[in-house]
Amino acid sequence: MQAPRLSPRPSKPIAALAAMLAALIMGGLTAEAAANPFETLKGDWEGGGTVWLTDRPEKKVECKASYTVSGNKLTQKMRCTGDDYEIEATLKLTDKDGKVKGSWNEIIYDASGAVSGKAK
Image 1 (tube, one colour):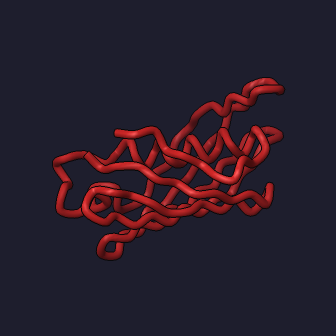
Image 2 (cartoon, helix red, strand yellow):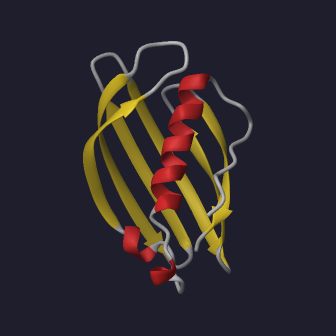
């Protein structure tokens, strides 16, 4: 699988978020779900994690995400909170013959970008 590409270049914390979002989505796409690579992601998820920031200490966060699938489209809504860190993002992806592309938007930091990759 190709690494996701993000654009435009947002601030470092947001770039980390975008990479995390893309990795969560793209990492779950497998050949098993070739007809619709998003189908296995449908539903809700929650758990903890760590956000590593380039110029600040790492942040422990708790996240909740929901994945909605409609045909070849996926929408992810995610909210993560920590002691002094918070993100709220939406990711929208479309699959066309194994090529995945879409966009993300984070409302707290007012950042957005594009995501692209391949479902294998």
